Image 1: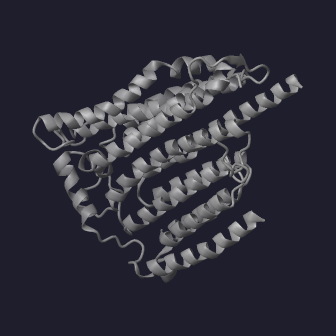
Image 2 (image 1 turned 45 degrees about the vertical axis):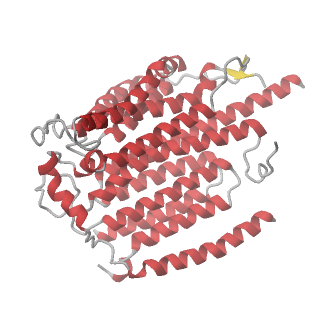
Amino acid sequence: MIWVGSGLLLLVAVSGFGVVNTRDVTSQVIALSFYGVLMGLTFFFFQAPDVALSQITVGAVALPLMVMLAISRMKFRAANRQEKGERDA
Amino acid sequence: MRERIRVRTFLVFGGLFLFLFCYAVANLPPWGSYRGPYGDVISRVSVYERHATDAVNAVNYDYRAFDTLGEEFILFTAVLGVMMLLRREEGTVTRDAGKVKDNIRLSTTVRVTAMPVILLTVIFGFYIGLHGQLTPGGGFQAGVILASIPFLLYVCENTETFRRITSHTAVEVIEALGASSYVLIGMTSLVMGAPFLSNFLPLGTTGDVFSSGTIALISVCIGFEVTAAFLLVGYTYLEEIITGELPEE
Amino acid sequence: MPDILHLAPYYVAAWLFFCGLYGLVSSRHLVHSVICLAILQSSTYILLLGIGYRIGGAAPIFADIDPGKLTVDPIVQALMLTDVVVEAVVVALLLAMVVKAHEKSGTVSPDELRTLRG
């Protein structure tokens, strides 16, 4: 059982490095969601069901949602600015 | 050039930090041998003292309820900050966004299957919120689960439905009520002569839904507050896309 | 327990902390740096849970087990439960600042935003 836990911890370490190394922001959101689900599994192994429930709902759904909302708002502004520039030019 | 120097300096000193950290934890007791007395005392005592079978939530909403009050107000203040940063001031002239607007509707299959999912999510969210003192769950998790429902509606219906549900003053009032009722519960126990935030309601029988006094009540209040907080943040970010108007620059 | 696994969660927590810091230092997009901050914060969860774990311990929910049984530590779990939810909203606040910076200056790279103008 302890080997399963250590394997999960190793996966978490590798996946964390993967999230950091993804430079494109939209793909990083998906990597963050995967990292959240993996952390939820690790908390489940650590006999912490409350925290695992929190982590799965927040780290895999709500946190990527917040990031995607911010990215979409910035893209909306940028597309509008570009279109306004084309119309005025 | 600047970035490479910055990264290399960081790698040197970060490596030093890693090495010092590993040296510092080298003499800790091995993983899995928790010895501390506080956790064992809580495990043994919380079922008899508070009639709550979930020790984690008993700690969160009763033994250390003051820390949870602080965390809830961090949430409240962060939402306040988001709304203040991204607000539109009174009297700004807005213009229509033109071609870049959000009016794509998904296929009928997605919309038809999303409706039963929404029903299940509502039931599940209320179940988790009400059973915080018995099984894993509680206010925080229920708030996040219930807050995802309008976003599901936004994905499968048009944006008018989302705007009708979330942009109301009702959501803001619910958030304020949820945050303030936690403090009011604490004050009520002050008025009755006990310390702030002590459990003053009748404790009931273990295993019932309406047991363990103020733990269930506080959990419900926090559920309202977290739901409203996430909805307000989501609406503030999506405001321009939904209404399709941008302020004149 | 085999010798190499004695301090596994502490090393993983330190590695995640180092990764998050590296991402912050070498980032070229402000949203990327905010996500690396979230990774930094999650390293503390692994550290806390590693301290509270007990081999052979059960989850601290007594709905179906006897209250005298050996469980893992419920206190650190109570600390982390609220933290996980609050982290999402604090990230939303940081992203609101990023969105405002993008509105005012049109760029989202921290190197170009370095010079503050009036």
